Length: 179
Image 1: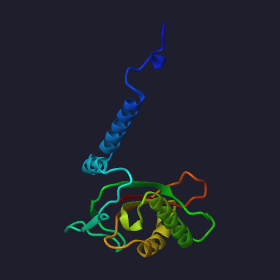
Image 2: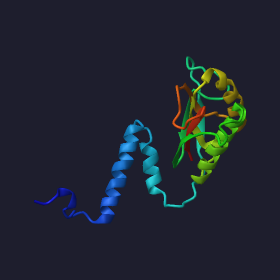
Image 3: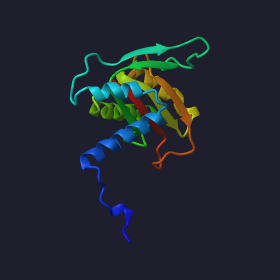
Image 4: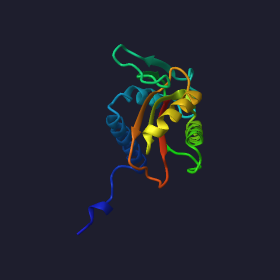
């Protein structure tokens, strides 16, 4: 009796790889609510390594009834671009530093990951920040965030949590950039 995992697959390896990419791309877009489908279509048409003509066009969305609680973020962002960079949660280098230093180190790390993807903090459209002590650390975060970001500020969410994955970590920030 043969094991189906080891039978010959009639699809050539290159085509199987393309099919997996298309499936995973579609699955990720579905998980993101399908709002990035147009971006995937545009990106698929651009040759690899091609320079995007203009960088991202960002428009802040601040409709009546959706006020920003702080000056360092925008209730919504309309982003027009060709590529998307997702940055996993980043934290500071020095867990024993004061919180302002930890926030700066975290934004510096975000910047390095974005740069590796061809983006910068100016291309960020969404931030999610996680705090073990949100009441203590949110004011410091808001102050530093305004120094690293520019208008229109990205959409942003701050979440208080009981713990983060790395013992001693008090802050973690993830980002989405479009360029």
